[in-house]
Length: 216
Length: 216
DNA sequence: GCGTAACCCTACGCACGAGTAGGTATGCTC
DNA sequence: GAGCATACCTACTCGTGCGTAGGGTTACGC
Image 1: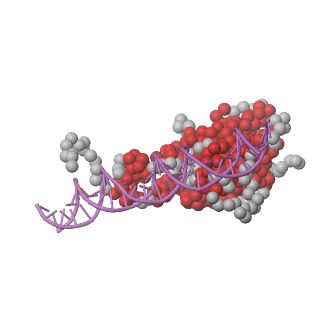
Image 2 (image 1 turned 135 degrees about the vertical axis):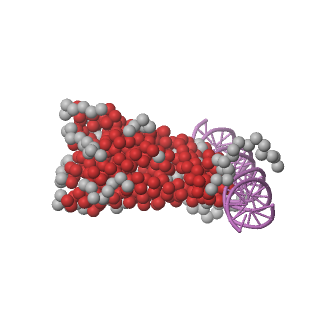
Image 3 (image 1 turned 180 degrees about the horizontal axis):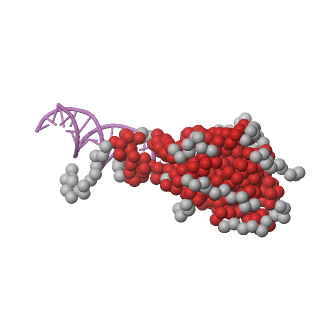
């Protein structure tokens, strides 16, 4: 139709693996800004520098694309954390290294974090997927607490352990959000602050110092 | 057209104020289950037992309706909390009463909680509204911490205070989610657990016991 | 150098859902 | 019991965005 006259180098015709990553990058970016429903496949395609049918050919429907984003960012995060905390270290050091890795990840992948924890939670089709990932984290933390407890010869109800772990994970996520909104903040310092809240409180509990409600 | 022959009592023609509340109830329910975008005005109208144009006549567009839900549930929650914690009590008692009121609210209004904290956070148009409410909460908590600190003659950087408050609010929200997913759980007991994590940790910090990162 | 498979596009069909036009019935006031 | 405001409805328009049909072009194997 029209001769491709003064076209720039036009890096077109890239191998599939490369294009898929570009698409996922664009999808994570758009999903994180707009949310699942408000994001349009057209915008994602345009942002990836490709046409829409390509996205469908490689990554499937919108839901499948979102799940693919979830998986990539989720496994990236899990690897970052798991790779940082060797299982033979003392609990507080493991916790510290895990937190540092986690906040480092969030600081470096704000979009990925937003997709995972701000967008996926509200949407039915994916909430389960997310909850499972979160449950794994809670389990790890609970395991660490339990281990520390046994080392001290103490013991605590399973529900109590789970709930404390939940609270710690929630506090961590909250600080991650804070970090995502404060680009100037230092991930490592944030991790230190989290340790101050979490470990101090947990340590007290581990030593048997429990708080009891006052009369009325 | 067709004679209304054997029609049941048909409670139609209710006063506006009543219908508005019914609509808001339905809207909160549907929004909490489906999320903002996936919820349809038709479903909300049907659930409220009314036709769609009525919803538009009374509460306006979909966005305005969502904001109305946000405001009703938000002020309900704020009132529940504010009414529970008199400002002249010691900090730990105030914290305890506030938490108890908060978890009581979540236990009794799971849908409202879901709309506020699971749905509104991801959607651009409302994230600001929500963030402001959350900021007010963080401010209150930070104020309590600061007050407790000054009483002990100690002082801490403003950012540190804010971040700790953020972590505590996050932990609380996380436990609220846990509570919303465990209908059999007792709100008061959950509040006690939260006090154990939050207050123990905060108390340590207030007494100057800070945690410092180990070498490497 | 030629076939073939992989890459890539423009241009559409189609469903769903927000918002409205225009009209009907009911209760309240005087 | 006439008039009027308010509650209420059915049945539409129209934009938006998911997903696809059908066809073009470039690189790689042989």
